[in-house]
Image (cartoon, rainbow, N blue to C red; front, top):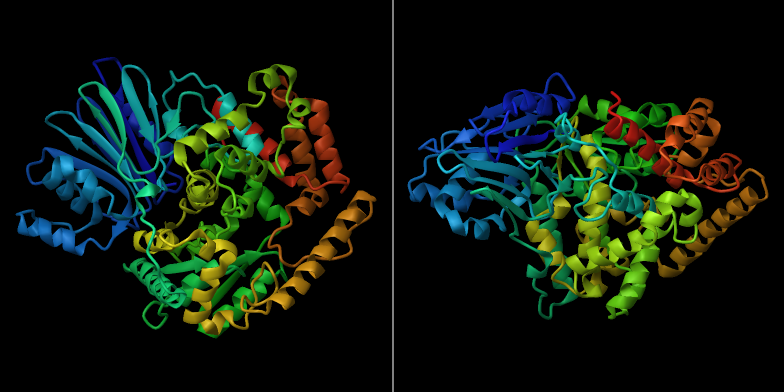
Length: 626
């Protein structure tokens, strides 16, 4: 993905900054048309790889005195008033872009900068360097959605938007972080600020990373607890305000002259985005992908017809998905299960029509999907840990099977590690189960869901209206019970966008969201019954008889029925090279794959994790080229 890179010498040494910086920038330049900017001083090197879409001007940018410079990735919205204040204080704006504004803001407010920083609305990452006193600060957005990995090498610091850039340091000894590995197989992603590489960390959300006078400090400038709960408010008033803030959030992300569009599914969230766009002024395009005949395509097509939007469909199949597996591991530094990256062909197709994708990523928070029913009624933290562990461990390697899954040597090292790690991470994030969402956004959101966006950002810029500060703060100021089971969200959608919600179904249920509860229950039992019957037939060794058009992909059957993909799975996961690593019990792993291939179980999630992990080892530990 586009991003930043950097090297900072703590003291004089033989490190060739210019050569290393060039390699760091090159490795995150995925396309010839990326723009590369660099800055070199005697003890520091800063780099930027950019799509040239957001803030396309050359960087670094300097202040008037040339003693401060900035490199930035991402963008911010709605700072007109702050900018006018700076102009009145004597600051001159020559370029009028986001990094120039931030640099002047820092120059003006100094120690009070963090109070201004917490109000910046957007997804961003920037580095400011003082050429006189050699002070470096690195800041990310509230939610940590622009990643920055860093590593202290003793005599120097390395930092970059991708781990592979740090690994351009040839003296770095590559080793798998066992705690992170245990989390990866227990939960499907790594927690907190760990990475799969020992010694490399991810900068926490809302951070100011400072290096000055040979000292590193990481300070948090904002946290979720700063959102105050609102007083008594009528439900209709809440719906009205939430709808207006939602439309404002989308409108803020429609600026600029670049081609704007979105990937449209049969769900509620991308539909909420496209419904809030005034298509008379913004002629957006929508792209849908999936298996031919899937509900996502049918529903998205209907929404586009209703709104008068051009709609493009990209068909998915096993061959297309299979062709992008290794690239997915490479781009995400091995942290994203390959079964969740849908198709690189979709991105190639989308790039023909759009430069900026308005993304519905993590809209689950609005629907209350992160709210666990048991947690809403539970106030004891000890009980909460177990509830969360079970919900996150479902479908992955659980505590009952991990002794058989891992080799004896590894199991002795990581026994119960993922459970302890989860407990520690929860304690560091929240103090009350009622704030359950915050833990999941910082982890499942930042470490899993956003990995899909990182893949997309190799081609397109992403904008995320669900993480507009004003919209999100109001959302989280209301009681949890209003968000639970999509209650207040559905009311808002039906009030503000009835034309695309009252009679067009939701892909998940096959019914419009305003359907009567009895109708929803009947449909739920009908769909559930078909699913249970299919599972029973599989266990009996018979093929399922009901086709489920709700799914836009069919990883389970793609793995079974595509001969090339099937053989590839066995060849990679059970190769002599993989087995020599001695992480897993080969016979148990083979059983997982065999049971899946014979249709006795659906194990695509675990097979995907095993495939991802071995490819990660080859690329990031062994040093294989993609």
